[in-house]
View 1 (cartoon, rainbow, N blue to C red):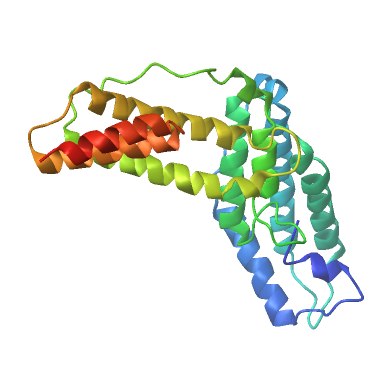
View 2: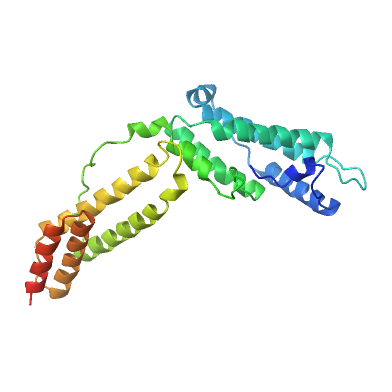
Length: 263
C-alpha cells in the first residue's frame, strides 16, 4: 500500500523537510483522534467473518500510528522516532499481508470492508489498497467479489415487480436509466479482471439490470399500441431496442415493420 510516511523509513530516498513531516504527522493524528469511537464488534461477529477481525486490527494499528505521530519531536531532527517507524511498519505489514489477503465470508463483512476503505481514505487522503500501478480499490473489489456470500445470490430471473401503475413515459424513462447503467457497468468490468470469480459481483448486477429492462418492455408490450402516435413511437423504440439487446432480430424486424406501418 502507498503511505505518505513510508519513505521516512528508507535511508536511500529523499527525506521531506521537518516542516512537511511535522504537518503530515499532526494532520494524520488529529484525523484519527477526532474520529468518533467505533463500537467493537462482538466476539461472535469477529469469529463469523475473518475480515471483521482484520479490520479491527487495522484500526488498532492506525490508532497506534496516530499516537506515535503525536509524540514530541527532538528539535531539528529529520528522522522519524523509533516508535513512529515501528508503528508504521506494523500497520503496513498487517494491511498488505492480512487485511488485503482476507476474503470476507458474509454480507456484513463485505459491507464492513467497503465502508472501511472509504473511512481509511477520509482519514489518510490516500486509498487503502493502492498498488504500484496506481490502481485504486481493485484489490478491495477483488476480495468482495470472491466472497462465498455471492454463491447465495438468487439464481435465475427474480419475480417481476408490479409496473402496472406507472405511465408509459415513466416506464420508458426508467428503461433508459437502466440501459445507461448497464452500459456503464459493462465498461467497468476491466477493474476486476484477474482471479477467478472477480467478476461475479458485476455480473450479478448486470443480470439484475437486464431483468428490469425486460420487465419494463414486457409491461409496455402488454399494453398494446397506444393511439397517440408520439407515444406509440417511443414505445416501439424501447421494444425494438430491447429486442436487439437480446439478439432477437426477428422480433426487432417485426416491430420495426409495425412501427413503419402506422400513420
